[in-house]
Each structure stands twice: as structure tokens, then as C-alpha cells.
Length: 256
Image (cartoon, rainbow, N blue to C red; front, side, top):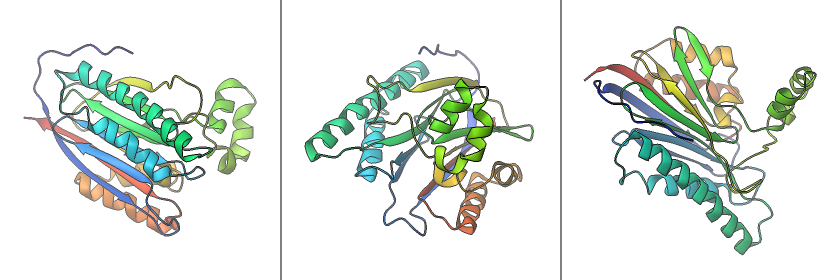
């Protein structure tokens, strides 16, 4: 994983808003988020509901990421430090789980690191996602680390199987922070950023209950980042809010 520094260019204005709620069914909110507009780092971490201490796991992820946001020299350094922080969180979670006797303790993570100008690095582990809205298309940048996605990627016959069993297979994680093979690998994607883009980071409490076409409508209607987040939250509530849900909206505006 290597991202070169980008020289020159004016910094974009950024409009950011977020929400993170318990929902109507869960006893606690096991999601954690980071919104750092100075470092231009945004993160959603979702504790595994099927494991123990999911809220503690996602908190460990965000605390590790937050700890590196005040010591960097540029974009490439921030990406490297965030990657190292997530992998360090993986070890921390495993240590806590071993000490407490937990069978499984983990968290997903989706993170956006921007250079403030033309590019962004997007990383993920698990099924928390990052989308980019551009020209009326809401593109999922990240790829879920789930059994359904793995079957779809490795078998020409898997797509219909994954569709039939989407509800069950889509929630079976094949990779998470604190769970799975070591060393942990964070998947990174380098994307371009232009004025008018809208970037959405969210946990599966959003994308698992709001169908893609409906989510597209909520984002592309426009308005401020706060208005978009509020529309997304209203859709989750309308669906019954059966899981914790978190969303961060980053609107790329004109140059400063």
C-alpha cells in the first residue's frame, strides 16, 4: 500500500455531518465514529453483534485511529499511520479477548483519508462501507468482507446463490478487526475527488436496511450534509432501526 503525495492545487471546502444511534432493538450502540475535519480523516467502526464486547472493540479501533491524527506530515503519512493504527487495534482487540476469555470479539471499519485537493484513500475491513455519489450514480467503493461477497467473487454460480441467501450470508463476516487471519490486511482504494462529489461512510445498520435505490435518492436530492444525514436516518427509522446505525456524509464543495 503506497499513496504518493499530491503537490499544488487549492483545498476544497468540505461540508460534513454524521449520526450514530442505538436504534430501536439493540440495548447499546456498539458503533463508534471519527469526524476530524482538520486531519480530513473520517471513520465508522461497527462492533460485531455476534461476538462479545462489540462496543469495546469498535472503541478500540477508533481510539487507535484517533491517536495518530495529531502527528503527521502529509497525506501519505496519514494513510500509513491510519493503516498502522487499525492493524494495531487488531492486536489490542485480540489481547483483550484472550484476557477476558471471549471466544470472538471484533469490529468492522471503514475509513476515508483525504488530501483536501484531488484524491482520497478509502480503507475497510468487514462490511462497513464507503460510497461516492457522482453524476447521479452512487458507487460502492469498498468491497464487503462477507461470505456472500466471497462466494460471488470466487464462483460464477455464486451470484444467484448469494441473492437467494442474501439476508443470512451477507451478515457472515470473513474478515474483521480482531477476528480472522493474522496479520490483518486493510483493503485500500485510491479515488479521485472533484467538486460536487458526496462521500458516504456507513455501517450495515444503514445499507443493510435501506435499499440501494432508496439510498441513492436520499443522497442525490442534495442540500447540506446535515440534511442528507437526516434523510438517511429517517429512512433507517422508517425501516424499524433494527440495528445500530452510523453514517458520515462528506460533501466536496468549491475550492477555498
